[in-house]
Image (cartoon, rainbow, N blue to C red; front, top):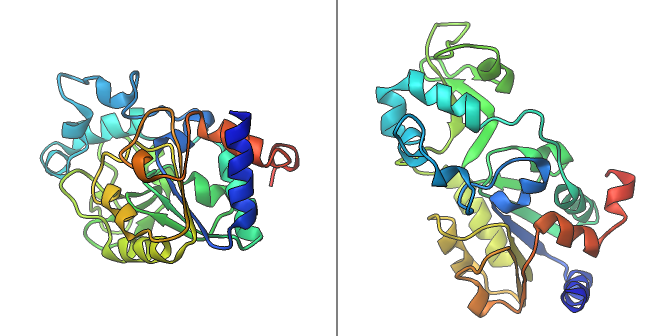
Amino acid sequence: MSEAIGRLRRVVEQSKRIVFFGGAGVSTASGIPDFRGAEGLYRREFEGLTPEMLLSASFFYLHPEVFFRFYRAHMLHPEAKPNTAHRVLCEWEKRDILRGIVTQNIDGLHRRAGNRRVYELHGSVYENYCMDCNAFYGLEKILGSEGIPRCDRCGGVVKPWVVLYGEAPDKYTVMGACREISNCDTLIVAGTSLSVEPAASMLDYFHGKRLVVINDEPTPADARADLVIRGDVAAVMGEIQPASRENGA
């Protein structure tokens, strides 16, 4: 592991345009469970239904009460705080070597850590809107309501601005993410199994010098990667730049 960490440290030192492509494994150190791991949320059932069913657009429209009961109980983690990985990435952005973060996570932790160049492919739990008048609401609207959250202005249903199964991600977010991936010299893929489209196919846009994969399990990108590190993302990032754990940046 120490040799791999040394190689990764040199990759970062040699890079001018890094893009970080992350998944659920980036946030596990913040106390947010992985979805697809051995003990992940997607391995379980709730009221006889799988999470994929409960988080589908069709289920949301047909059974919004059940959707929000599951959503509040298992998708919201307001107590979670940015971990070492998030803080290191914020430092990289301040140094202008990190050109963008492409994330499949909806937890909003990259922005809470201070990053601004973030492409949230699946949206964010911190953004919610009225389906009738488009009024915007923060996370507190969902947390502070029971049953189906309703708009204060018109009484319409307030929907999380997250991409449900059966919905397409925002095209401008996808375009921006693909642009950054195509222009970077180093792409770091971390904490993701690359099993969800269209995110998985975005790696096809990468034509830079160095591809790094950090993940507990094998991924489809391992074969073409210049460096593969098996391990926890936050722990690995902390080894690259341990000072981040001290200054709390």
